[in-house]
Image (tube, rainbow, N blue to C red):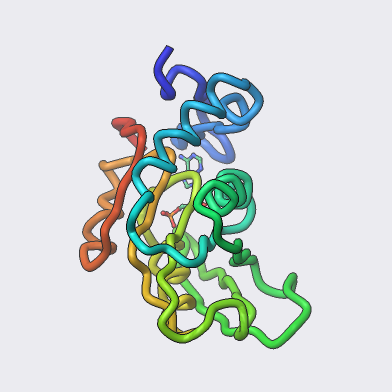
Length: 173
Ligand code: AMP
């Protein structure tokens, strides 16, 4: 089986017209989890990465695995109001309204080389905001990896100044 075969698609979730790409079935399968992890680890070896930052919440699971495998620390980027210490915050646009994410100001040191990871790239708004947070801390985003990419939403265009990788590309939104 390919990594893509472990991902479940739920039509019309959380609202009509959205094809929700559910990575919990990949995480729940030992072979799926291991092959996705190995492919992502291989993409990030020998890049001088010193931290992995994962985006709340599905980016935490593989992000933690990547950090452990690369022998570096893990940094959570969280939805607003969840982190207890001093934070930087970035707002980003949703289809209706805005949302914001935060990082601890001392989570990344100046000059650190950071791998940013999330489960899925759609419009790219979340990843751009997360990359800005890393940069506010003084870190350099050396790579951004996703399990799934939805090219129809053209998130890559927003991330054109970064080295972006995904394991699986699904057509449609
Ligand atoms: P975006 O900021 O538009 O790139 O959206 C990316 C974030 O929204 C990721 O954290 C994803 O987990 C989630 N997301 C967006 N679209 C989908 C989808 N079709 N299936 C699953 N998750 C999605």
